[in-house]
Image (spheres, rainbow, N blue to C red):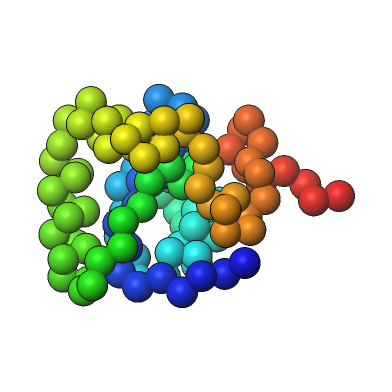
Length: 112
């Protein structure tokens, strides 16, 4: 079920304790779709980083970008702590919004 999201900072992971990616968007559902389908060339596609493990909504894009920049400078342990504070089991939060479960490879499982 789609939700309307405004400016959002998000963390993706390749797997539990795997490769992490920090991003910002004004369209979380669209951006997650693009990452999961491998439509965005670059880091996330190259490393199979597709699980939404954390996100935070902001009132303005300016505040979201500032938060993203700060988190990108954090060490890995702080990012893991941020994720595990609200998502200790490293669930793929995108499934809560109707996205298909990911296969172990990081690509969507077939719906057949």
